[in-house]
Picture 1 (cartoon, rainbow, N blue to C red):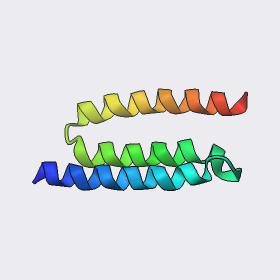
Picture 2 (cartoon, helix red, strand yellow):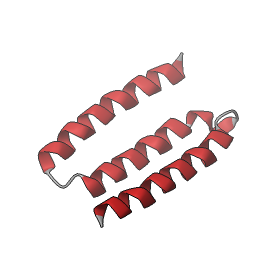
Picture 3 (cartoon, helix red, strand yellow):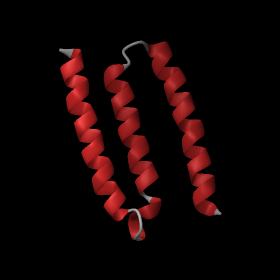
Picture 4 (cartoon, rainbow, N blue to C red):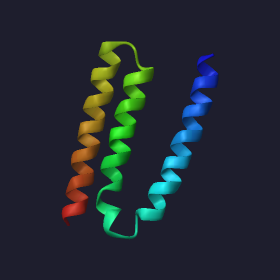
Length: 74
């Protein structure tokens, strides 16, 4: 059942990435990484039930996001 759920999620993420890549060149380019981050947080929240793992993953994501924002500034 979980494998099935993951397959649906993979499909959704691929589709969303495709939609976002259409926007990437234009005005929305700066927003795309943030949208991807929000999606990643949601995926982790849904699939990582252990709090400790959630906390570690969120820490990684926050570090990753701050790097992305620094890149956008330069």
